[in-house]
Image (cartoon, rainbow, N blue to C red; front, side, top):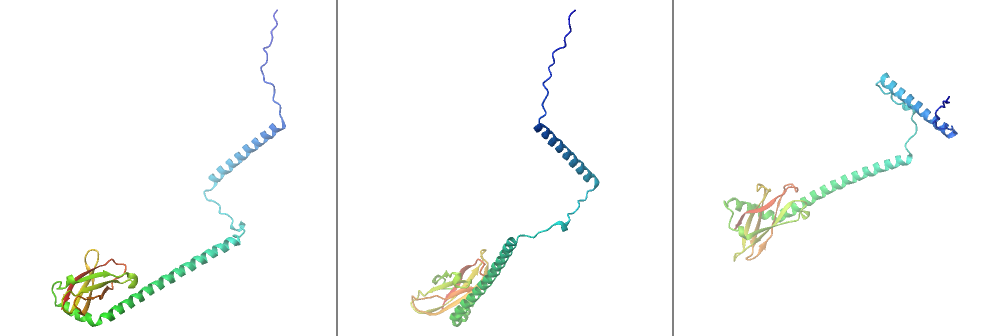
Amino acid sequence: MRELHSPPSHRRPGRRWTPRRTVALIVAASGVAVLAACSSSSSGTAAGSATATPPNAGAFSGEPPSAVASAAESLLASASAAIASASEASAASVASKAAAASAFEASVSAQQVTTREKAASVLSGEPDGGNAVNDVAITGINRQNTGGLHAVVVTIRNRGLEAASYAVQVDFTDTSGKTVDSAVVGAENVPANGTAEPVAFSRQPADRTLLPVVVKAVRY
């Protein structure tokens, strides 16, 4: 009779439980427990109430470091001082320009006070451009020298053989060609082949773009 033998066992040799493996399993198990607790807590909170509990302000303590607070105060003080200084400088600049404009206007008016009225009277009787338009040229004056006023030097050249007087009207137009201001100047007893240089100016705001044009010039 043949003996029956059990097939050979292919089981792997049993693992040895070392202390390191035991610690790893404990840590893993702890992690699973923590995750489960968090999940349970989150689901419970969401289901229980939709209103968040405000933090207890009384539990807070401490103040900003004094160095940071001092730096912030210093920056604010510097900014305030800079703004105040800029405002004062701007006001002083405006006042200075206004004073310069007034001084320039007064100076020009004083030089022409004796001739302007007569020149205006002569021009009022001239329906056209006049007989001396070709004897007149204009040159702009830097507004830094006029307190911001638009002003031009009106150069009058007497091309005749005898002394003569002149009346000139200068219009200041905007960029569209529309006249926004006019000035009348005069020069009396200009010698033959001589020149005169009265100044015409506008009182329009300095920030406007103006173009001076000679519209009338009469030799009389």
